[in-house]
Amino acid sequence: MAHDSHDHASHTAGHHHTHAHSHAHGPANHGRAFAIGVALNLSFVLAEVVFGMIGHSLALLADAGHNMSDILGLLMAWGATALSRRQPSARFTYGLRSSSILVALANAVFLLVVTGGIAWEAIQRMLHPTPVASGIVIGIAAFGVAINTGTALLFMAGRKGDLNIRAAFLHMAGDAAVSLGVVLAGIGMLYTDWFWLDPAVSLLISAVIVIATWGLLRDSLNLTLHGVPEGIETQAVRAYLAALPDVAAVHDLHIWAMSTTETALTVHLVMPNGHPGDALLNRIGNELQRRFRIDHPTLQVEAGDPAHPCALAPDHRV
Image 1 (cartoon, one colour):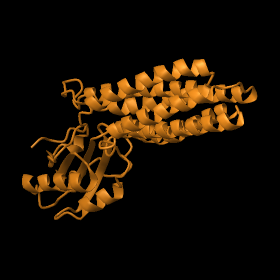
Image 2: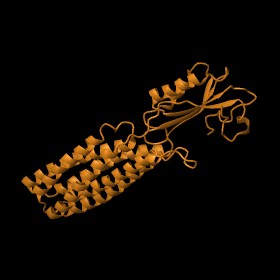
Image 3: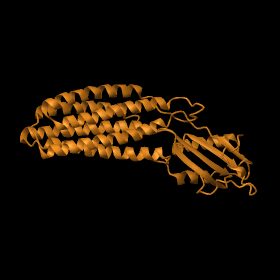
């Protein structure tokens, strides 16, 4: 049994590390969905740029810019998914799993920057509205509803449990709703000549992007800072471990994301009766995965010898 690897002199006797194997689930391979989604959205962006310039529609050009950022985001998420599947190495002992977290954060920041540019241009056009070819706007936006809905459906099955896939799904679903809004604005301009509706829809697009991106930014920043992943309650995990047979105390509990799909845990269990055996530890690992979606638990068993107290027992020590 491996001794504790923490650098504390009093922490090297009587303590044992055990990795409790559970059924870990790595990132699913969504390569085909990414490829189809990128191809569909690239063709749509080209159509929006061409017809947006012909029809003098800022809404179409704004949506093209947003969709271009989505394409880049899809490519980055696709790349991160591939990197997350790389095997561990001597330097990167967890592999490159955390690249998916960095990409999620980068996508969130990138989308917010793009949104700022869209909103600024929309405000300028609101102050100086120009005629818009409503028929072109309606046709292209209706095409966008179909493209974005189809792309969103590609990621629907995998949106739970993966921040990158959830972001792709939400962006595409949001884009479908935005495109529908552009259709309605085009119809409104067709019958009323209220050309301010076009930049107004651009502002609506900006608001939708901010709302959709804010949750992604919050969650990805939380994972980047090694925060406990969304949906896992630390106190519930602690209570489960403390209630295990022969466990007298629980300390040095840490829960963090290895990637956007995998969660790790380390904890010290004080068990005065000694090591409970690998069978029980494996059952604990399986239960942590089933109850809390924790895939990579490492449990350190300690006897609780007063002569050799654990230096990491206080909650404030890390």
